[in-house]
Image (cartoon, rainbow, N blue to C red):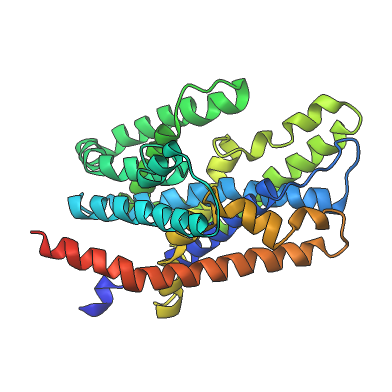
Length: 343
């Protein structure tokens, strides 16, 4: 009976990989790297590759959530717990920086007390809204036939991904994008994937990701001759591009098909990933982390940049994961006990 309650470690490994990819993105985005578009170096391409990891990481994270949420009932207590966790992280971080001498105006204090409505973490706000709507999304999914669900997914792919990719026409929001990923994951959970092509999902997903990265290098090379092309280096590696979407789907299916035994250590680390995000993405921590602690941009042209970046990213994940683990075992456990009593 106990085994049926255990989380599958293949998904938990994917959750960890997703968060590492997101940290890679933030390392590249917030460190202050500056490379001229007229030249291409190994370091500039490497930092560019890191910056695209977050797009894939977010997609995978939402796919994992949709896969499990479609089989779960919406629970008010879980929504309250999520709201409290996000708010407490923001308040504690604000207090620590206030003690260290940072001045906060009235609006900043209010924003840290109510981080979800003020969109302090865009992903956390969108994820919370997705969970609030999950019960209704599930009702819609179960009310549709398999054929109708496939038609809805196809329609949303056209609106949310194909049009943005080939016509640069964006008519949707982040929440709509999460909704698309949610129902794709639900479709994978509820109906068998019988086509043999899905037996090679990991390889197809990896090839797709290599294509995304390769397109960036190609645009960079052309951009050294025609400057405007360098501005579109990320075109096929954006979060909503059709290439990134299918790459995310196939990688997700590939990990779903992996036969990995339950690992308590892997699952424990995976349970800290949301906390890892809230910590290292916090608007006060991120400049302190990448510019004051690691001085990342100072290594922009260092021959050992790749090793330095890997070390900084792994160290960030390890430290934030440890802090998140302590939070889960103390404040998080206290919140759970408090909500359990509030029946």
